[in-house]
Structure formats: structure tokens, C-alpha cells
Amino acid sequence: MIKTVTLSHPTGVLSGTINLPASKSEANRALIIAALAGGNSDIQNLSEANDTQLLQRLLKSDAATIDAEDAGTVMRFLTAYYVITGQQKTLTGTDRMCQRPIKILVEALRELGATIDYLQQEGYPPLKISGFKGIGNNHLKVRSDISSQYISALLMIAPLLPDGLILELEGKIGSRPYIEMTLSLMQHFGVSATFENNMIVVANQNYNPATFAVEPDWSAASYWYSMVALAKEADITLPGLRENSYQGDRAIVDIMSRLGVYTEFTETGIRLTKKHCEKKVAFDFTNCPDLAQTIVALCAALGVTLEMTGLESLRIKETDRIQALQIEVLSMGASLDEMTPGVFRMEPAILTKSELTFRTYQDHRMAMAFAPIALLEPVQIQEPSVVRKSYPRFWEDLEKVGFEVIRNKE
Image (cartoon, rainbow, N blue to C red):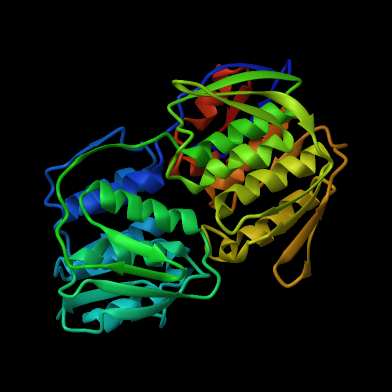
């Protein structure tokens, strides 16, 4: 078991082509919808991420107890899937997963006619799913400022409900692009819906089997943007990414245009090169919360003052990501403080240590967000295997562009 990796880059010059993993957000939605369409679809370029491989296995499992491990989409999507398909299952996960709330989704499914019980703490997994009557209320009001995954889980089963679903989103809509991704994929498989203001309407209808090619992961691309920004010179090509992507993390293009990276869209993907970097920036991460860690680590290393909003969902992710970031940037000499409710400000670092060590908190994005700093100073990343969740080849891909990656077993 590799306990840490030590990273450095002898030249600080990056050049090459990197084939990113496929989007697990797209892949996991496509797998659920394909299963609801009868299982005869052709899903191409499935993600090698553990979350997607896990969901693929679990959809085929006839076990009474299902372990979603640490995968949020797997837990939430399967909860709704087992309800609509009338399966009796016990659904559990890691200790951290059983600390992540699921009450909003469970209450909504109960309103629709599901029988779901909490086996331990009220509002949290593990769950016992016992049946579905299909005679419940089909007009639901759901909080939309916590996790878009609850909404996506409900939407994917909506066309199979006897009366369809009218979903009224209450409050600030977080991660809206993920909801729109879900609706776009549903449309690809033959289901129509309307999304106007805060109201989504899906009539009772059937999915049609289809062929779908999963796009590479824009979240994974964000780490390469960070590397380009920190490199002395850089010319990196990332094939397969689309300008008209379903993925909300395509927002990295505009964010990084202010932090030193120029994006050129080509016929085959994107090409990243360096440009001028601003010294003070402000971003709203409401629609792309998974980019926040990348940008915090990058700005700390670049010496850029950063203001952020839209981080509400970060406390219920793989770890409390806000707290983890506050601790880790402090080790770099930076500070991350909540100035007023929901508004965070980071004052940048002055890198003086000969080697920086970063903890990952069982969170893949912590590992990959801080790894690019090795272009400035040697970096040690603890528990590097966490990257298997979304980008299993990450360390090997760093080696392809000249990083020295020392794997330490002790």
C-alpha cells in the first residue's frame, strides 16, 4: 500500500497530450437511464473512475445489501432507482457516506409512495427500501440549495411514475448545470421535460434505448489547467473535450482565463497555453462546486487574492472541504476565512518551505488540487490512492509530462 507520493518537476516546462478519464457525472446518469430504458443501450467511453465501475457492478447485483462505498451519486441514484423498480434493498456505504445527509431525497420518495426506513441515524444511510405503491403525491417541493444529486435522482425516475412529476425547486438552485445535464441525457434517451424558472415538469413516458458516448471529464481537466498556470512554459492538449459540453465544470475555461491559461478549442479537443494572470479575483462556485479546491490551491500558490461564494455544498462532500482547505492552505502560509455568511476570502501564501506535505482527508479532489504545486516546490501527498474515485491514472499521467513521482510505502 502506497502511503504517500513525493512530487517534483525538474524543469517546470510541460508539453504533451493527456487522455483524460471520462466524466463520471455523465457516465453514472447514463447508466441509470440505460437501465430504466431496459438495458439494451450502448454506453461508450464509460469512465474508469471507481464510482462508475462500482455503479455498473451494483446495477447487475441481486444482493440484498448494497454497498455504495464512498460514492455520493451511487448512493442517491440507486436509492431512487430501487424504489421505481420495486426492489427491496438495504443500501449502505462507508462511515463517511453514512454521515452524509439523504433526508431530502428520502422524504421526497416517501411522498411519491416509497417505503424507506433509516436503519441507524434519522436522515442518514444506511437505508432499508421495502416497496413502492405509486399512489403518492406527484407535485413535490424540494430544497435545491443542498445537493443537485437529490434532484437528478428524482428526475431520472420521473417519467416512470404513474402521473409523472412536477418538481418545484425551493431556494437558490445549486449546481444547476448538473440538473440540466440530467435533463439533456433524459432527452437523449427519448424523454421530454420542461424546466422554467424553478419548476421542472416531466410527464409519464418511456425511455428508449440509445447509444451514448461519454465525454472526457472537465473536472479532471481542471488539474491540468492548474499545472499550466504554475508551469514556466506549457503546451498541453486534452482530446475529446467539447465546447458545448453538458458538464458544468466547463466553467474552468472562463475561470482560468483570468488565472493565466488560454484555451483553444480545436476539432479534436482543447489546447492549453499560458497567458497573463490577474492578482485578485472573485468567483461564484454555485454551478461548479467541484472546481473550488483546484482554484483555492492554485491561488494560494500563485499569490492571488481570492474571494468565493457558492460553497454551500462543500461541507457535505467526501469530507468537509471548506475545513480541509482552511487547514491545508494554512500550511502554505495562506489564510481562508469566512468574512460574512457564505463569502470566503483567501489571502495568498509566500512559499518558503523546501517540501510541502498535504493531507487528503479521503478526498480525491484534495490530492489532485494540491499536486500541481510541485511545479514550484517539492510536494508530498498523503494517501494518494484516493484518486481512484475519479482519475485512477492521475499519477501516471503526471509522469508522462516530466513529473518525478516517488511512491512511498512507509
